[in-house]
Length: 289
Ligand code: R5P
Image (tube, rainbow, N blue to C red; front, side, top):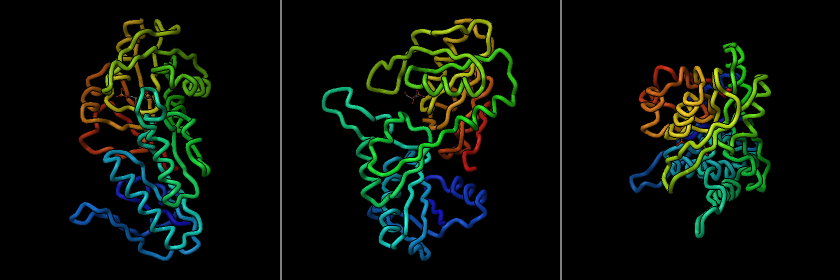
């Protein structure tokens, strides 16, 4: 077994290796002055079982290209099997042709990953489970739900209701609620244009007088999750907590979340977070194990 990391999230790769008790594989990935990415695998990987850990988070195109080139290098170095460990699958939200003349980039990226040499893909909490079907190779989609639900189970918050922040996440929210043994509610959300803004319309379910735990796959601008908190407080909730797998925070998200009514925002480390993206009520749980 050999684990390599691109430049997207070396800390996660190091943590996975520490958990496995192995050394991180030697490799380098850098850009020439002409902006071309170059990769060198620094050790013999002939017939080895190779895992490349690289979430395709921002800078998405650079990280994706680096992953593709690393796999090409591994394939040409006669690796026995290559698994692309894409802990966050960028472009996952562009998964359907819901307007005329638009792409399905999630499918295009799946084709690129297979063509570049992946034998398998290991990922976490895809935006939509159906993205697995965009690949012609096996996909293991893991979920952070046990990590997030165990954390809240240990906190032992009373009168908790799990809230799906839109219909898209409602099935997973039901799974999560079952793990916690708590009821579930759903928020009706609408995207208002071509940008990242969303609008909360209704809270569906019995939430009055309860604590709410909002649940989503990813947080980008924070708009969805903060609108949800405000709608829940208007609907009579006493306290709000939030959890999501992927903290894909845009530049405005940390400020918005820090100033939000959330007592705590709990996410995982599928993508790296910088010091600037940290805030006082943020908890990051590791998916490395
Ligand atoms: C979209 O449907 C996803 O499930 C998330 O709700 C979305 O990515 C969150 O984005 P934002 O934080 O920008 O509202």
